[in-house]
Length: 116
Image 1 (cartoon, helix red, strand yellow):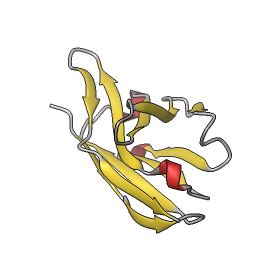
Image 2 (cartoon, rainbow, N blue to C red):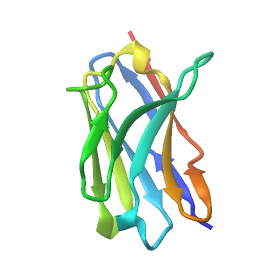
Image 3 (tube, rainbow, N blue to C red):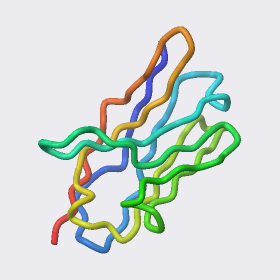
Image 4 (cartoon, helix red, strand yellow):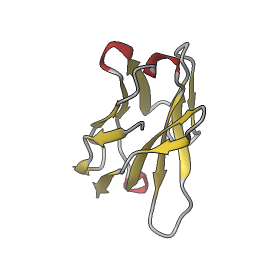
């Protein structure tokens, strides 16, 4: 079994910052690409950012320049630093990876709420 556990969500005012963490139980974490998704009420889950095993990154247009994804392989953790938060960033944020033989793995999610 592979588990992903997110933390770091909360309530923040617009313009503020949060850092999300996702801890992975898999010993081969360093080989995995990792993704951060979010789902707002009434909307589909969307990819926000991802980081590959060679640390190349992808960002959705809506978060470019504000969010930064990073990873610490020794800690088997991926981070999402979120700056200049906007009310439209309010969502449940999920960590995701794919493991051969097990498929797509999701964390339980962490709520981010941005107030005006």
